[in-house]
Structure formats: structure tokens, C-alpha cells
Amino acid sequence: MTPDHLVRLLQMTGAALAIPAAAAGTFAAYQSYFSTDVTCQKLRNDIMGIMERNVDPNTKRSLLKKDVTEFDKLCGEVDPDARAIFQAAMSEHPAQATHAAATSPPVPIGASSPRAQTAALGVFGAPGSKDRYGWVALARRQSGSWEPHFSGYAISDTSLPPAGTVLSAKTMLPVWSEPQAGANDQSKLQSRLPRGACVRVLSTRGGSGRLWAEVAPASCS
View 1 (cartoon, rainbow, N blue to C red):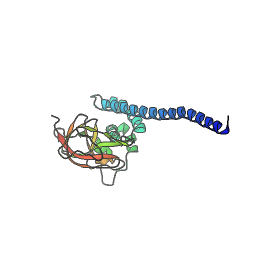
View 2 (cartoon, helix red, strand yellow; view 1 turned 90 degrees about the horizontal axis):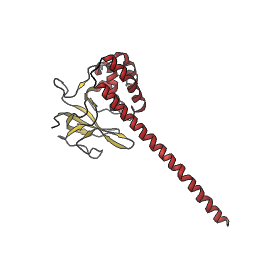
View 3 (cartoon, rainbow, N blue to C red; view 1 turned 180 degrees about the horizontal axis):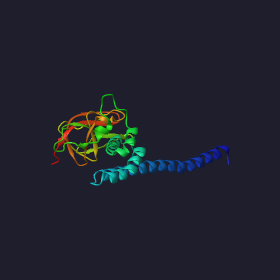
View 4 (cartoon, rainbow, N blue to C red; view 1 turned 30 degrees about the vertical axis):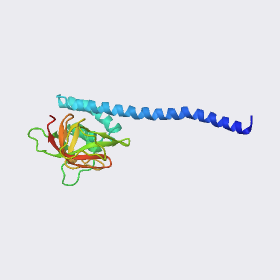
């Protein structure tokens, strides 16, 4: 065997050995990503289910504690809107307010505390509610693409819904008094939008991490 043939054989052997290793690495990353995504979705659904139960506050507090702590650790950075809702739910129960306060940004001087803001967090557009409009995140950036929070329009950074568009929430969302940039300011949280509820778009605003819309309550019919 000539030296050239030997070098070529060694190169082919090395390439053949590298392919399974690369494939295994890609599969492991793929599996890890989707495993976390599935876990976050399950935690999100479980927590919202507990929040919607009509049970004793002490029972609800006990049920929420473990899942909210786990969600905050695994999913809070990639889903800040769910985190805001869940922190608000925990702050409604004094025994668990410590954890929520520890993970919330400092409250500006003169502003009411997150505890005061979230203790009576109402439903956006509910009868008797004073919140007739507010800001919601239309979508959040996740793994380089946009994860939409609403159905009813193909939302992207180059295609935001025009004023008058009626959207339906795919998940429970916080409603803010102004768009949030970076870490959420819990003192700006004014109410929550249940999943399945509809809103009418008043105006929109882009962003690096979330796409925003000022909305008003609307009928889904």
C-alpha cells in the first residue's frame, strides 16, 4: 500500500468514526432541549390548573409551592410572562411571599410593593374591572424563533397585527400598565388575561425579547 493510499484510508476511517459521535452529540442536545420544553409545558399547565381551583388557600399554597419553585428554576428565564403570573399567585399567600420577593426586581421608591400589587390581581376586562386597556406580550423569543401567545394572526417581528385585530390568548398572561424591557417590574402588573380570553389590538410595539400590543377586552364571538 502506497503512503498516499494509507493516508486516505486513515482519513476515511476517522471520518466514519466521527459521524456517529457527532450524531450522538446532536441527538443528546435535541433530547435535552425538548425534554426541558416538555417539562416546562407540563409545569405551566399544572400550575395554572392549581390556580384555577376553588380550594382552601392553605391547600392551594401547599400545592403551588413545589411546582412554582421548579418552574422558576428551569423555565423562568425563557418564559418571563408565566413567571410574573406565578410570582403574583405566590405573593397572594403571605407564607410564600419570601420566594417571590427574592426573585422580583427592586420596587422603585414611592411605588407600591409587588405584594400590594398582586394580592388582588384581577381578571382583565371582568365586570367591575377598572382596567379597560393594558399591554400584553404577543410573543416571546425562544431558541431563536418567536413563540406566539395568541391565535388569530400570524405574529412575527415583521408582521404585527393591525389595530382592530381580535386575538385569543393561548395561555394565561399578565397584563401590564406598560411594556416590559428586560426583567419584569412587578409593580407594573395590573391584571391577568385567562387562556381563551379575547382582546382587541389598539397598537403594537416590537422588542428584542418580546413583541408587545396595547389591547382592550373583546368578545370572542
